[in-house]
Image (cartoon, rainbow, N blue to C red; front, side):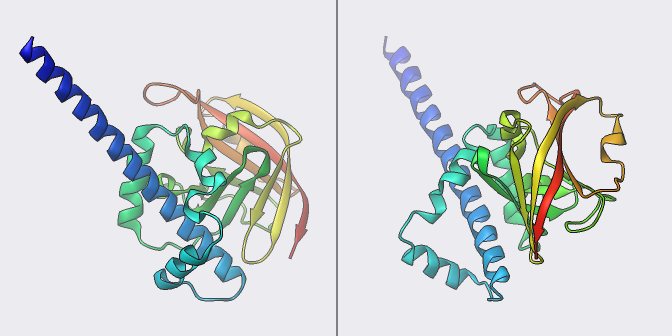
Length: 227
């Protein structure tokens, strides 16, 4: 029986260590996104951002900034692989300027938007798809994100939900019109449009071993803009 007990203890210690690693990675990702979001808010106010000022802000905050409901709800069902990828990319990338912040109130979600869709970018945030419109321009703005990361929550969106994109130039409000599932070859979903539109793209199914075979598309129309 003694070897069995040692095996049980080793398994318990191994499980506890794995939980600790995932917990540390999750906290690290929350700090990274919290800092990015805070820096963006400072830029909106025309104020500089620094690590020292951020720590002072956290210390003086009346609510737990790093454990905000938005961040916790956004990441609560991330895959362990995506959490590790975020941690590694955040540590390697440094402070890349953000295009803006994507906010979906019905999902209690907020995430910074960077330019590009390379693996480094999508491991840290969501990214504007190259060749699509910029915020504030007439046309189709495409934003991509990982299905087991930031955009996993998109499965809960329904037509009529509102999406906000905040940039240094203004706030843009979109309303979801249509959700569809397409093949990767159907690139027409990102074709230019005569009106200001927003298209969110992620892989589908959301829970799939390996590379998911289809794409989940959220189409939204611009409702108004405040500059």
